[in-house]
Image 1 (tube, rainbow, N blue to C red):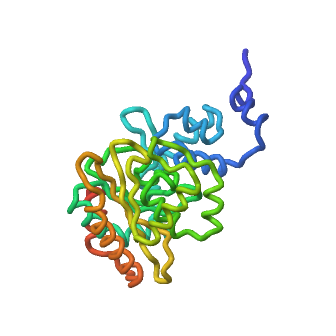
Image 2 (cartoon, one colour; image 1 turned 135 degrees about the vertical axis):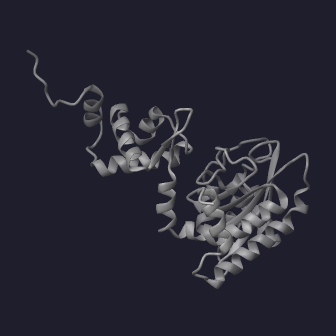
Image 3 (spheres, rainbow, N blue to C red; image 1 turned 90 degrees about the vertical axis):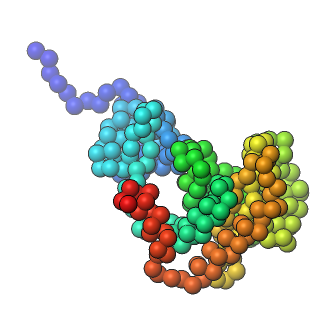
Length: 283
């Protein structure tokens, strides 16, 4: 007659032996954080790798988080953070409260132009997209909501760098500047000159910096004290648009968001409420 033991299996023993012991909460948090590092849509194996968990542990935790409602599984076998996670975040974070204030103006810009519109904030050496309105809602690239790209390759990133303090800018310029295309600025001196022009002009254009077929335009959103830690951006196809004809519309939207933020209205704009209700399937 065989006897059952409570010994962990091989993969769990390897995890326990090779790394400092983590609490159950720490492992769940690492699992959720994996979606920021991995691009937002992950297989079970990718979750385990990014969260530094054994496959067995990752499978167990994913099941528990799904039962709670924090993850969703799509038809391709990839996991995503659920609407429940976004709802919790929007109720408590300054960044998503900013998104709520800006959203009506972003929707207006998107409807007028039919182009992809972004709201971006700095996140370490990256821009993070708080909002992304586009004609194809199933898009899952780096400039989706919650996605990140290096500052020097995007128009919103150039705006945020241009108005950043000198300490931050000095640190950024001393890091390797990744090249995406032949048009990506990778020399610190050239980048600093571009940023001076952005500060002077009040807008940025990044043509073919990330991909050869597209460019982007951006303008700063200014706080009540004149600081800039948010930018509005728009992506355009290179073969169909002159970016300078888009600048005024982007600047107007950024100025309207700046004005709304300075008013500090506590009640959400009715257009924001309507947009959220429609996307939640309530109406």
